[in-house]
Structures are given as structure tokens and as C-alpha cells.
Image (cartoon, rainbow, N blue to C red; front, side, top):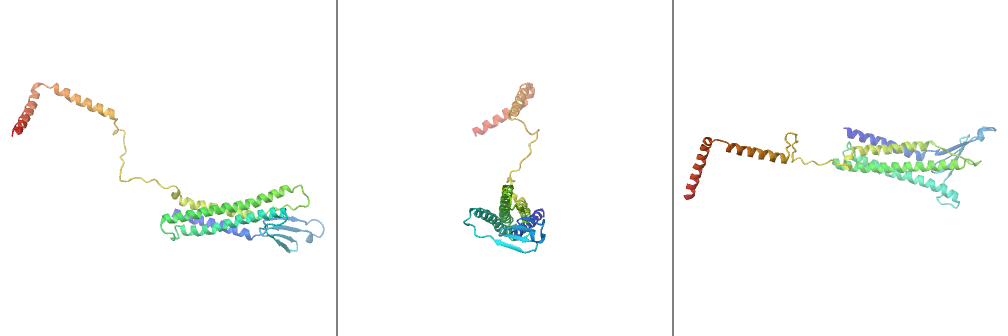
Length: 269
């Protein structure tokens, strides 16, 4: 029951994370800036510049959006080439993570104990471990994509602090939502691995056919000491026999002689 509950929690958390990541691809305002609103006719002067992974847009206070789709990756202007290059890298990382997340969700759904699809318990654990690995790699790829976008944005903002007339963008809500979703994905993969860690660290096999008797302090006698005790007892018995009087030994000698006579007679026969 505890294992199944952890797997269900991991499935819900990782699925929520992938939902957040998918939402960021369709959201606007990955980066934005605000200009105007002071002096003059403010209805026309105020404007917002914002971008996504797919286009640059301009919105004024009349609520009219003017957008320009990103052109091809390689263009003649080197500056535009660097700009489009990092955008394409962010796209590739996020989409690569989503592709892995699709297969990871399928594997984890099949390998969970509550679905009864995978087969035996070991087969389910192996499938679930594969899905958890895909979840983890996909989450790391998404984090790398969002970090690359943030680092590029911050570097451009600090490099243009001294330049006048240059737009300095801020980080938009999709980036924060993407970070939250990526960490949810990684957390879900960790919960999956917790339930199947026995595959990575198997139990030691103990041979039950050979019972082990616990050794106590009384039963342990060193070999040298046992030999000494045996020798002393044997020597003491010999000395006690020699110290007996002849009257007490006569019966013993008669029995020995009687046995000797019978054995000689048997040999003669």
C-alpha cells in the first residue's frame, strides 16, 4: 500500500510538471518591457514589447498586437544569427524534454503496481525505473533550456545598461512556471526511484539450509586450553590408578587375566 501510494504521488506530480512545461510553450511574455505612459497623449505613448519562442510582438494601449514571426535560423546578419541560434537551442531542449516525458509517462503508467499491466513485480519495477530515468533526463533538459534563456537575457541586460535607446527586457511568467514544472518532474522521478531502489541495490542472499548456532561465552573454549584440560584429567586418572592399594586392584587384574585366557583359548580354537 505504501509503495503504491508513493507511485501515485509521483505520477501526479510529474504529470503536473509536464502540464506546466507544455503551457509555457503556448504562453506569451517570455520576456517583456514597458515604455511610455509619461507625458503627451498616454493612450498612444504607452507600449509593451514582448517575445516568445516563436515571435516578437509590440502592443500599445489600444490593445492591438503587432507581431513578427521569427525567420529562418541562419540569416546574413551575424547579430541576428546569434540571437536566433540561442532561441533555437532553447526550443530544442524544451521539445526534447517533452518528447522524453511522453514516453516516460507511458512507461511509468505501465510499470505502476496499481495498473496490473506490466506483468510480474520485477518486470514492473524495471519498466518503472526506465520511465523514471526518462522523466529525470527530460526534466534536466527543460531546466537547461530555461536557464539558457534566463542567462542570455540577463547577460544582454547587463551588457546594455550603459547604452541608451536599447530595450532591456525582464523575465516573464512562463520562465518561472517552467522552472516550477521542471522541478516537479524531477521530484516525481525521484519518488518513482524510491519505490524500486531494490533493483539498484539488491538484498543479500542468506543460505537458510545452514542454521547458525549463536556462540556464547561459555561454549567457547580455546583449543590449547581444551588440550591442557584433557591432558591434566588423563594424567590425574593414571596417578589415581597407580596410587590405589593392591587389594583394590586385584579384582581388576583378575578380570583382565580372565579376559586374556578366553582370548588365548579362542585363538587356539
